[in-house]
Length: 143
Image (cartoon, rainbow, N blue to C red; front, side, top):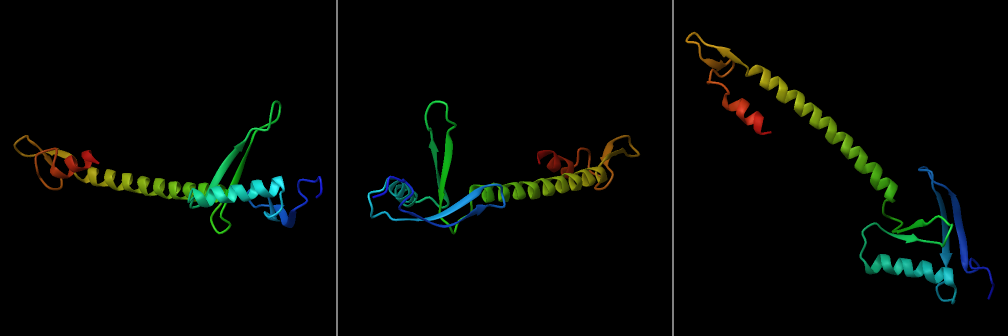
């Protein structure tokens, strides 16, 4: 057995990712009593045991003076945390756009239902002629 902890890991591919990360794809031989392979296998076991739909994150505190890291173990056919965040941001932007559009429509409807004084001096809605605030404006005020 080699003293190299990566000895039983077989590099399949490596390279930079589009989102600024680096991906290393390895095959681990779990049958050998090798620390790194056993850790990887253990992480995969936790992913299965916890029934995680996407990924499990592990925080690794490496000792005094060393920066801690987060290790993400995910199903290869599921999105990365970065992809999930990007999708959430896109949905958020879409919702903001819809919200702005709704706000503009509400303000246009409210403008149509402004008050005016009738011949008897009472305030009435310009559109539906109800006493103000009309039912439409009261409904808009609840939104």
